[in-house]
Image (cartoon, rainbow, N blue to C red):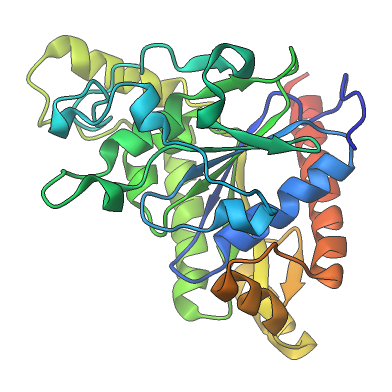
Length: 305
C-alpha cells in the first residue's frame, strides 16, 4: 500500500515511454509504475497506444477502462469534438480532471495505481480516421487523485509519430526503451536529437495551418515545452556482453541508460496469455530505475534553482 507522497521529487511529473515496436515499452511502464507505487507515489498510467492492448491484464485488473475518447466526445473524424493536434493545436477542453468527478467506468485502480485508456482505433471500425485525437488526449490530460498530483506515466505507441505531433511538449521526461537492435539504438539517438532541437526553440511545421491564430498557438506550445530531457532503459538484454555493447554504442551517441532489464521469457508468456506481469529480478531493477529517475529530477531542480 502506498504512503503519503507529500514532498516527493516526482510529484506532478509526466513521464512518457517511447520505443520501436517490440522494444518492451509497456513492460517497462508496468514495472516502473509498481516500483514508484512501492516508493510511496500515487501512480496514474495512461495507455496512449492506439493499437496495443493488454495493460489492464498485466496489472491484474478484471476489466479495461472505457476509452477517454468517449468521455471527451469522440473523434472529430466521426463527428466528435477531439481533434488532431497537428490540424488543431488548441488545448483539449476539460483535460484537467479529478477522478472523483468522472464516471468510474473510465478508470480502474488498485493499491495506488490507476489505469486509464485514451482510446483504441481498432474499436472504431474502418475509415475512422487517424489516431491524432489519441495524441491530443495524451498531450493535454492532467489527472488529480485524492488531491495529490502523483506521477503520470504515459505509454505511447511505437515510433516517432506521437512525438512529431507535439505530445512530448507537455512531458517532463521521455524514456526511450532500447532493446538489442540497431533500430532501437538509432531511435534513441534520433529522439535525443529531436528533444535537443525542441529545447533550442525549433518551431513546428505550420505551413498547413491557414489561421494565423493557430500558427501562433502551435509555436507557443513548442516554445513553452517543459521537457527536461531524454532517458533510456535497456530491455530484453540477454547477457552482460550484450549490455556492454549496447552501453558502448549509446555512449558514443552521448546516451547513458538509467537501468537495464535482462531478458525473462516468463514475462513474454504472461503477455501472450494475458496474465499479471511478474518478474522478481526485473521488479528489483525497476526499483533502481525509479531511484535514478528521482535523482534526475532532483538534479534538474537544483540546476534551475
